[in-house]
Each structure stands twice: as structure tokens, then as C-alpha cells.
Length: 370
Image 1 (cartoon, one colour):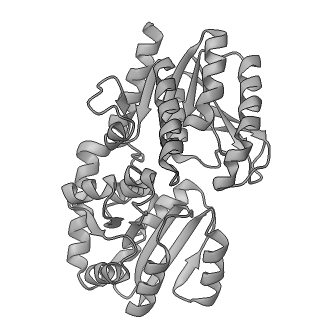
Image 2 (cartoon, helix red, strand yellow):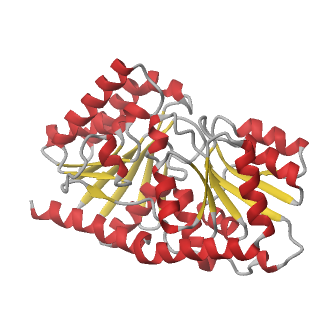
Image 3 (tube, rainbow, N blue to C red):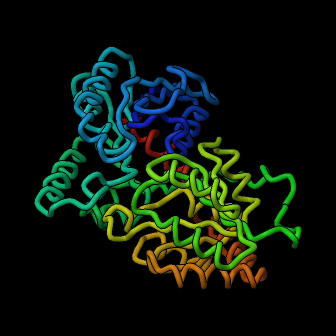
């Protein structure tokens, strides 16, 4: 099958979409990823693994302001889809699903809707506006040949709780522990290292971790990624010796640095509706790497951390609780190791990518039979 996968970012990288693309390409499908190069300087076309990435260049903001540019992106994506030859369009989120529906119905091709984030809840909106966007999104889902969500909690969010027709594919990473050639954490003189890699966007608590690390002492905090807080964190790293900012790095480097760390964190503001249902790579990367993680209370992530006993759950923005958690783990290496071991065992049994690959390939086998 010829598969087009759509994403409204430059795919440089896009961890989840590229994992899916690699799985489908390895299964013998002809896969092309089409991204919106609204920032960055990645090439217009490149080959990765066995799939191709094509980027449609049109500059737009990284954060919320991008919504004003969506109609232009939809037109660009629609025209591209209409002129190309393909069998399935795999659309990630509502901001690619609109042109994907129009193209799929026009060409009488198959359509997969992969919901990374529910658009109505990306930011806090007036209730009426939020409900209109949500109703529009949910209505459009009926036109998809398959719908995918990243976590069972998303079914509650989109009003589909108990719907067995929707597929759940977690943000699990491939097993990459081999990327660490030396476990530097075994060297006891090393400072306690906290690591965060991902989108440096609003609604995430970075400052409490930075301040807690400074108060405790002998703790390093390392940030990687891009987004709203990137320049702020770069500035802090130039002023504070316990903070490092490495910018955007390859995914293999993310995993390698995770393996060299003692603690990860994903402190998302649960007052932002989408954050309550977020299923970030960081949680499953920590589990795969056998590292504990700090998670905000009131989120779906917290439910997993509590169930698997693989980290600490703290109230969002509570600097004292965050400081206590870091200090507890720093002073108790055995506890750190135990929580990491619990996460690794849960990854192996339930959250590993091999299980997710089977689910994804089963969807596409079903499409081929239609």
C-alpha cells in the first residue's frame, strides 16, 4: 500500500509518527511523511530508514498563533494530496485531518485518524467555543476508516469511553537501552542528574525543578528541545552552572542522555485540559530506560505512575513537593533503582513498542481487506 502520513510540524523529528512510519515501511508499505515546515531549516525532502519525508514550506508560529495560519496549511496539504498517488492517508490530529478527509473522499481512498492531541483541549477556551470545536472533531471521526488514540483516558476525553472500535497505541519507544555503552550513573562521585527532552512549551513547570536543584546542591538539570521556553532556558543555562541547555538533539541522543540520567520529569499543568490526558514520550522513555520520573497529579500519566510504582506524583507548581521528591531520590539510590526497575518491568510486559507495532499492523491488515 502507498501510505501518506500528515503532520503539522517539520517532522524533524516527530518521534511517534516516525515510529509508526518505520513499522509500516518495514512491513513492506510505501510510506511518505508530509510535514509543514513552519519553522526550522530541514531539507525539503529526505530519506530516513525506509520511508521518505516531504516538507511543505510555509512559515508560521511555533505556539498558539499557528491557528491563524491553518487555512493556508489545509489548502497546501489538500492540493498536495490531490495531485499525488496513494492508497491511505494517515492524518495526525485535527489540523491535518480536515484536508485528509477532503482528499480521501474526493479520491475514494482510505483514511486513518491518529489523535495525538484532542484539539478542543489544547488550550483553555470558553466553554461554548471548546464544545463547538469538540463536536466538530467528534463528528468528523465518523468518516475515518480507523481511529487511533494514544491512551485509554483519551476515550473519556472524546466521549467514546468503552468504544472498542477505537484503537489504542501508546507512545512507547523502541527498546534502545543498548545506546548507552557505559552506565555513568554507577560512578558515585557524579552529581545527581535530572533530564528533560521535548517541547519546551507553556503549561509545563521547569522553574520549580531549576530552583529545587539549586537549593539542594550537587544536582544538574539538563534540557533538550525547542519551543516557547527555549531561549529562556538557554539564558538560564548561561547564568546558572547547575543548568544545561543543549537545544534540539537527535532522538538517539535523547535516549542516550536519558540512560545517563538519574531522574526525568514531565510536570504538565492539569488545568490545561489536554494535559490531563497527555501521553508523553518522556513517561515511556523513562520506563524503557529504567529511570524514575516526576509527574503532575491530576493527569492520566499520574495514574500510570501510581499503578506501576515507577516514580513520584507531585502537585503541579508545588515547589516544596518537587524539592522533597528530588531530595528523597538523591539521598536514596536504592529507591531510585527500585522505581526504575518497576518501570522497566511494566514496559516489558505492557508498554513495549513490539506490542504497539502489532496493533498498528493489525489496523492496516484490516484496511487491506476492505
